[in-house]
Image (cartoon, rainbow, N blue to C red; front, side, top):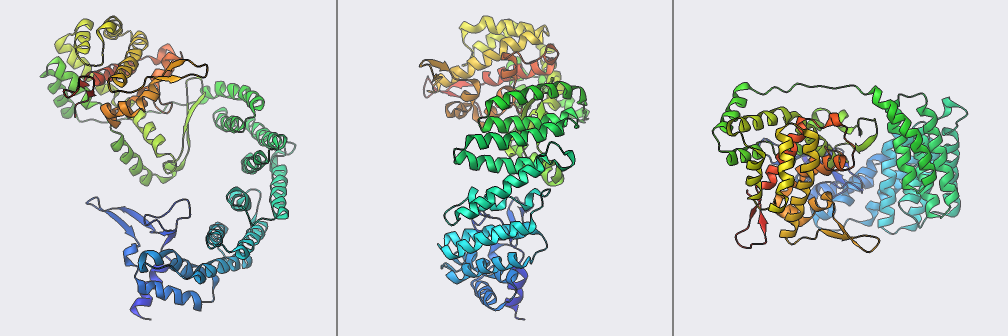
Length: 560
């Protein structure tokens, strides 16, 4: 074996199939097994595309025509097809795509696999190549192979081994599928839904399989405008979960039925969704009694805390406010890095979908896996981090107030001397700050949160943004705080760090969501604690740091 052949063989089967939906870092179908960063922050990958040479491409092409095993033939030919343009700057021979398709069909027909899921991935690839090369004959052969393979491997209780015929041949692409084949796919799904949703036999009932079948059928029937069939299949799925929920803990059952309710709403089944909502309400009420408190300990070195507090004691009131802002302003970039690092250390937890509940057990939001919902995970982490910081934030504010003993009026004078707090609203500000100093935290939240919103609205006006939107009745509505925080004119001044913080604190259901919870009367009196009031005051201080831009009297700018 030559040095070239040894290198080509050793690397050929190390590349990972990424699929059409998730391209590799090289924008190819195949990608590295491992990617990461070295100690200097530089990207590393193994195997690297830089190891592939034009001579390797030629070697793989030769091997694709010589080897007799279809799995090996498909891999060699596919690498040639995938990498030729990048490595040799030339188009691969069409025969390589044909070799991939034909070998994959042989693998599926002869069941040459250890794991069925790998063959399903290969069949998807073969279908993609037959479409890309505009080969109707091979399109039909791949379609036949997909149908035959699902017949051979499908097991009701293993959801990954069926439904892919629908996904590949109806859900994603059309044009080569005959009416008889389409009818077979739908008939098989209907039969499977009937078996796994049997309410008269609990042992045969599999609601999760019913969901997988029903959602596919509902999408198909909706496209065919067969509304009665949409209702029928989704009701079978809903009934299966409602039956399973009877024997499950309220907390688990609540998450299941919440998903059912979401699906019914998605497909426009309002009456059915309303009926399920009654069951959901009962489950949520019972779920609250099953929730357990979880606590953790965070250790902060005493000397670090003392240095921080001494810095506040040595500062003026205005400088102290700035120190409090800087010390407790969360960073979304750092939060994202922490979430991704934790996902590597605890990969199982990073994949589990999390459902958030309020004090009544009502699901308020859900957060997916790190891979599919990084933004949600970062917001959730940021929300938890605000709670961890709460004791030290309170201690910092107490230290500053103990030295300067500011009155509400003193703080108001400081605020209205800045850009975003108007003199015409100083009475409301003073009322809210008086409540804060008196530790009347419910009144603090109810008074100062609207002042935060008013300040953001003023910022939007000063920076040339629009504060209104059209209503369906023809009038003008004031934009919500969430809409304003997502407006580029606000982000331009406050920066992404502050707007992200305000969303976590005030408007995002995955965070503290204080603005919406307070204004809609959803927080119980016991929820208005010191940590909530401190964070509201902190947000006020953040906005006080916005200053006028000397270049234009109307513009605003935030300090670096």
